[in-house]
Image 1: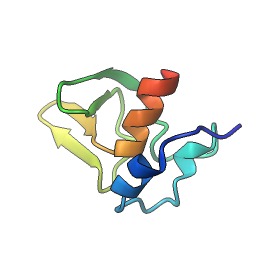
Image 2 (image 1 turned 60 degrees about the vertical axis):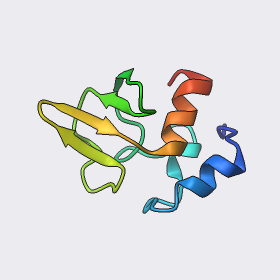
Image 3 (image 1 turned 120 degrees about the vertical axis):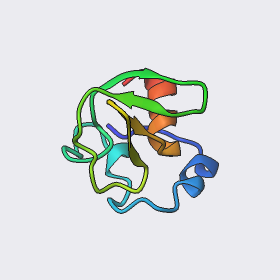
Amino acid sequence: MAYSIAPETIAKTSLCQREFACLQQGSCENCAQCEIVGENAINALYLGNRKSSGCPYYFDFGSAYLCTCPTRYAIYKRYGS
């Protein structure tokens, strides 16, 4: 099953290097399907692991790991996963 995300959000994700594999449930084992442990006030997700290294939307922030991918954030907000 594919996630349905607004085209405007996908257009904001211009740096995606994995051809939006996160839009297919369970198809992306080394990118945006990281363990999400929460969100913050700037539309970023806290990750529980470092699987997304190499992604332009992934950042180390002290001892936390952040995902700032607009598409991944929209998936999390809409589907909770």
